[in-house]
Length: 127
Image 1 (cartoon, rainbow, N blue to C red):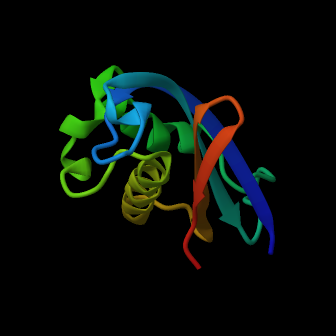
Image 2 (cartoon, rainbow, N blue to C red):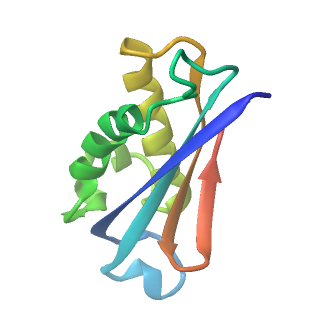
């Protein structure tokens, strides 16, 4: 399997889960936390699987794009609900895209977890 390295970031955003049969169908917000985990089969010459600064470089622009916004207005959510699961997909796909243009050898996105409040986490990963 190899090594995994994770970094966590937080952002604030509002959303409405359209069609939800309860309070979440109303406008509300969260202080979201996203954790991105990368995997590597080996270590580089410095003994790192993935440099934390590299993860920062990839993750921070995606976080900034959602921070202090209304998620329902973002183009990614035009045809999907703004659930924690779909927000995890947004980050996962964005990281894969960014990594593909400047990826350290042997590094891949393993999974992304999104927490909308303490104790409630949705995780997305692909085989």
